[in-house]
Length: 140
View 1: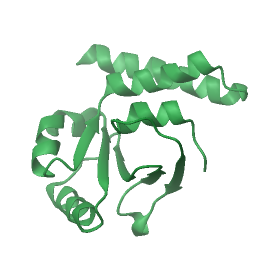
View 2 (view 1 turned 90 degrees about the vertical axis):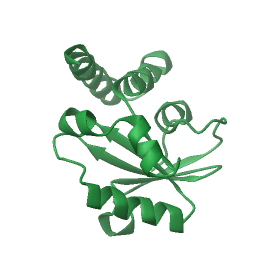
View 3 (view 1 turned 60 degrees about the vertical axis):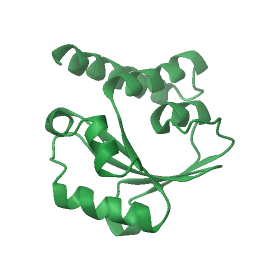
């Protein structure tokens, strides 16, 4: 699935502009939720909304990332966000992974407001997610 470069840059924080992005759902037999192949690296993404990110899962994922010279991105909301800070993820992964927080997600969703996607459904979904994220951010 192709995706918007600016949206991906806000989520992945690659440090350099991206020229291509391709997304695959549940790569590596579900070890991660998404694989985002970019022009400069592979990013494996784990999304936790209500479920916990266990130490065992994180360690298995970090081992995989190191073995495959890949980057990790954790999108954590609710309980998982309370337990895993960006500094903790960065330290425990040997600077291989980072947390994309609510602010990052809101900035990524704002890309859709600026770009005005051609599909009205995408714009509506982005708007709803933005409202929910603003609500979660206000509770922190």
